[in-house]
Each structure stands twice: as structure tokens, then as C-alpha cells.
Image (tube, rainbow, N blue to C red; front, top):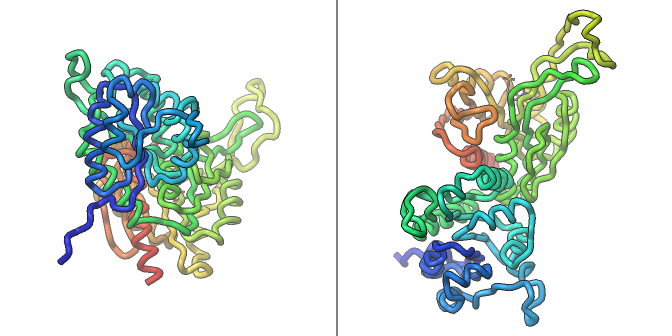
Length: 412
Ligand code: C5P
């Protein structure tokens, strides 16, 4: 048998390096990426060149290091770098870089490249513990994750100046493995040309002109699903009630009530190859919302509720019109184990679905509002898969892996 080709052959990596003591590890990372077959275009910030000689990275990379937006021989280098990349990796990523990228500030070649690219972005933070744990950094990292960036968490170890703590950049070998896994998954499990409709967030059902009935769904899981689908090349429409950031390549449609969501979803579902109903749609709404604000002086109002339309059930009932479509529902329950499994199976059958993503929202770290989730995937074919407590983006990746399998079976 011929030997396996190196795992990153044909892959173009833009390797961004910032001014951190961990910049020395970028040299090792660059060498390992080239050994793995990647074409590496290194970009250094000015501060990075204080820690690591540009000559070193130029010698190790596939192209000479770039450090400036203002090279007369190559106008707009960020556009060319951004368009040609299969992935942009920033290692080390400093607190400044994370802040600038989160804020959309493109004042040097690396940040301009990050804003210009449609390729997946991986950041590998490195900084002192205090800086990593500062709420500003934590918020920037959370925002970048929600927009679809892949964050390789720093580990615990010795930091600059002899300190020890969390903030040490991940090891080059681990970063390469992560890139291989990421690009490999994106390559094999891609969704290019697939039209995906995702819903997200809890609906708000008016009681009067100023009040509404709502639920605890934050929209984070739905937005993560949309980001992951777009990163895999799908055409994504996200019907959402949440004011969360939307990943590049995702078309947002903002709604508020179950009725608005029903209109947008049913109006667009005919075009979709995959529908993922991650939204927390209200089951009941006030039957006759008051057109003006209800006054306290008028006494406690009697509120009569009526059922909302079940959007997913409607899609399930009419699926004979779209036999190839993959239909995914969510089941947010307050039971785990066998109870959760039973609920998932019931929903699968009742709503005529292909896949149910069930979670026990009362479990620690899972469900509403958290950045993490723990789910049970139950397929109409009887398959089951548990995804242990992890980032909602990782949960999204597992759900889309299952969707890819269903699409393949359907089209084979
Ligand atoms: O029946 P239940 O509300 O538990 O089902 C949850 C699933 O059904 C979710 O995927 C949710 O988005 C969807 N749903 C819907 N329309 C409703 C209620 C729930 O599409 N009115």
C-alpha cells in the first residue's frame, strides 16, 4: 500500500503570530504544519517581531513573513491572504488581538485578514492568568465563539516571568492535531450546496402593549448550529428571536412571536434540505392580548391562553411533499435517563421527525442560557448517541454529523 499522504496536503494556512512570549512556539507550530503538508503563509504583528525574528518564520514557512498592510509591492495583502486561506490560525493570540477581532478593529495586517476572511478561524490564546480571566477577555472570547471562531483553550503551566497558572498557549502538536481534526471534519462532513433552515431563541407572546410571556431559551444552541452549518459550507437561514451575533455566511431573519416564526419557517421550509427547530417556541399564548397597557388600578387581569401552532408538527405532517428533507427537533425536558429517552422517542413519532436532540435542562451546565450543553441524539432509525457536557458549538458539530449521515443515506 502507498504511504498515507500527510494530513494537511493542499491546505493553505494563514498563521498569525502576536506579541507574546509564546511566539517562540509559533516557530515549532509553523514547522509542524509544513511537515504535515500545509502551505503556510505567516503573518506577524509588529510586537510579535520583538519576540521572534521574522527571518525565522520566513525560513520555516512556505512564504516570506508579512507584517504590514503597506507593502508597495503587494497592495491589499489582507484580501489576497483572506481569500486564499482554508483556515486562519492565530497562535499565540494575545488579549489585544482577541479584543480587536471581537470589536471589528482592523488596524494591522493580521486583524484586517481576520475580518476579510470567510475561512474558519482558530485562535490559540496565550497570556497571564489575570488577563485571561479578566471579564473583558472572557466576554471577547465568548463573543468570538458565538460568531463561529474556534478557540483552542490555553492550559495551565509556567508563564512569562516565572509565574505559573492558566494562560499558557496549547502545545504546537496539539494545535496541529486540532487543525487536522477541524479541516478533516469540515472536508469529510461538509454541507456545501445544502440549504439549512435553523430556528433559535424563545418566542415572546404579547399579554398587552408592553408585557409578554416568554421562556428561558437563549438562542445560543441555535446560533451555534447555524455557525457550524455555515462553516461547513451550507447556505444557512437563521430564524431567530435572539439578539445574539450571527456568524458570517448566515442570513438572519428576526422574529418575536410563535406566529411570526411559523410564517417565516413555513414560508421558507419548501426550499430547505434540512430544518433544525432549536427554538423554544411557546406552547401557549394569551388569546386576546390587550392593545394598550393593562392598568394596575383595573385589578388583576384574567388571562386566557390558547395553544400556539406547532410549527415542527406541521412540517412533519406535510413532509410527504419533501421526502428528501431532514427534519430535526429539540426536546427540552426536566428529566434525564430513561424519562428523557422516552420523551425523545415520543416526540420523534408524534411529530414525524428524523432526529431529536433531547436534553435535561435541569442538569448542571446544560440547557437554557449556558455556553455548554449535554444532549441525547435519538434517530428515527433507533440510533442513539450521547454527547457529554461540552461547548454548544461542539454539540452543534455532533448534530450536523448526524444530519450529514442522514443526507447521505437519503441520497444514496
Ligand atoms: O412539543 P414540544 O414543544 O416539547 O417540542 C419541541 C420541539 O418542537 C422543538 O424542536 C420546538 O422548536 C418545536 N416546536 C414548534 N412549535 C411549537 C412548539 C414546539 O415547532 N409550537
